[in-house]
Image (cartoon, rainbow, N blue to C red):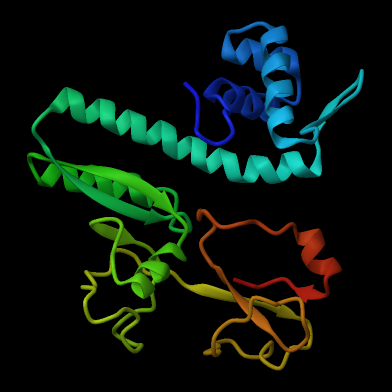
Length: 243
């Protein structure tokens, strides 16, 4: 199967992901049930498409190059979504005749939430199944601006309508709250807000590395948010959140 993007093939993507996970061509080949030569050939073909090496290879180790790391960050979720879509299509073809509800889930919601929602809904609503689509949480705001949703339902974090002004345009219906989550503030030591127990800041700044700014992070530990190593936090001069 070939993709439109420069003739890249699925087998090349699968080889790249396997080597990126294993950091070893032999183990990647075993995982894919192919020969090591096939994996090497697929990686070379992908590197020709990209134009630069994706791995640094020595006799002792295999590591991703900076470009390889960037490619991995983009390809992994896209490949996962592709596999999920194919599985959903196969599932729909086996069940035949059932209505399908397209539900988008923000990638920052707790990891257990999408599966729980799907299982609960399908157990209660006969004849309808959910086609799950994982999307960045910011995607819904682009839909607001464009005036059209790309899914039937979107589940993600929004300010609680009970305590804030309406966070969505009037043509969007906001459903019931499924789960509430507390937030912590990550800020520099000595920040003007650091002495308070409860904070109601204005729009959190994306430049939390600058003096006088703060950013909000999920309090739950099981969320699909980017983790920041504590050593990096301390080295940047931040105080670790106590939550």
